[in-house]
Image 1 (cartoon, rainbow, N blue to C red):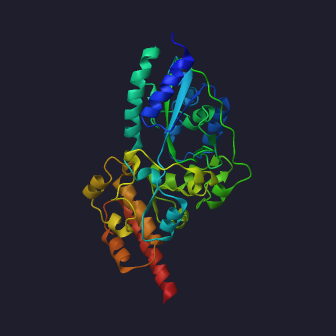
Image 2 (cartoon, rainbow, N blue to C red):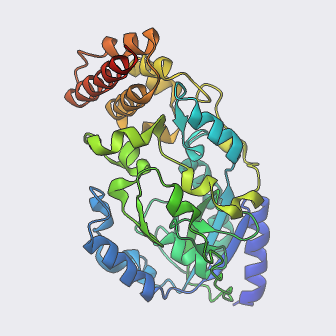
Image 3 (cartoon, rainbow, N blue to C red):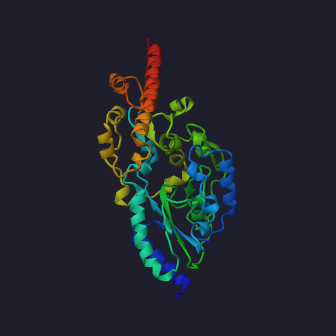
Length: 355
């Protein structure tokens, strides 16, 4: 068998050629993170994401997910495209739809998966491991814990992985392997006494350092949640129609963030800084066409309209916004209709205050 150190150098070189911005190797022992996961699930912080409860211990024990695994190769790739000032300006313009940075380009799953396939093809000659062994947010894997142990960053108080050299705007991927590659040193935590992410969260979803209650998180409410958005949360959502970046935008370490270089992750012009009413009036066919091959299709068309109805309700009252909302008053989705009614009620209240 070839020297594992030499193999690791080869893998590092291949990953760089494929456009990955970081790579590290971790062992498979993440027992403390398993305890944290179980406590998080016990507190019901996962909301309706029932898939988080499935697969038993496989999520925290890589060798149970794929027998024979002794190492995990963690990789990252940047997607940062919108600085803090631009993000803040967009949030203050309540007539424009705010879309989380990661979703502005093509769906990262397919782009990274294609890179991993090439990487795996090169690694296989050194491995006897059988089965699906590469993942990009597509399997029960505690990817941030493994990436931390691989030296790619620490898990911050906002629960995102943060790298001292280039912040937190990156995607993660993993390769499980039976090659005894040399381990990298786990990253040390550099959050210190900072609580910026906790303080800025619009819905107080970060209920304590390193504790996220997804049920309050705007990303969960506008993406994973398939039901009505709780009324108590709607005003805090503002004009965020898909996800939220506040806890990353405010993070001091993101002043070192590296700009996106992967072309697939560059923002699509038809999604950038679009008026809410324009997005709301897309037919289902237009929505499918304009969001094709992006993460924006995850909540479905009804979820898309639900989210924008909330944002329209939070916007300043204009004839165009009122007209857009009224045009959906008889929408076939009861969920959408309910959010439209709520939004129109918000404008009635605003007009009362003016008169």
